[in-house]
Image 1: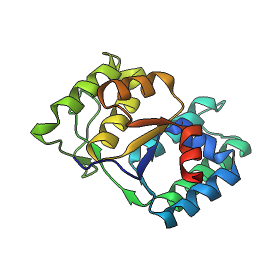
Image 2: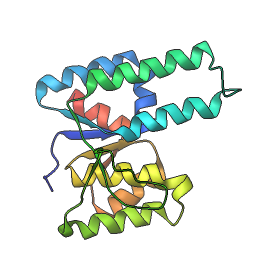
Image 3: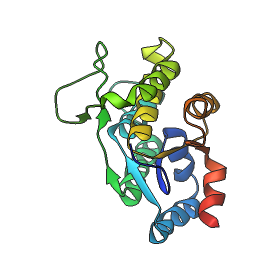
Length: 175
């Protein structure tokens, strides 16, 4: 596992906040010139699509507003992304696939697995993506940027200072 420094990963709540603040997006983009790196994984795209799917009225139509928001999220991800990384393979029922998008976690990462299980809290439906995003961020040496209080607490309980609130992150890159 790499030591975290200026490598960050955003959860969906943070990406949504970037999407509503063009000045933050520009600031984050410019921070790449100062050595800040932004890692993304398939989880953010899946959650973004899920947010749109959950808000639409039918299986066929998506509102123009939702479609524009979704396109903006994907534009932000592609613009800010320094590196794409695969998810960590957990081999949980109905939550894995053999398509090359998953990485294997080394045996020395048992502490990360304990954090994963704490976040998951036996609720694959509600907390799986958060647990996967946290696990992937930690194993790849990232600091997770989030506005999710529960996720923030759980990560920092196991790995102090490995999760940061969105507003703290913005202040950090302004410095």
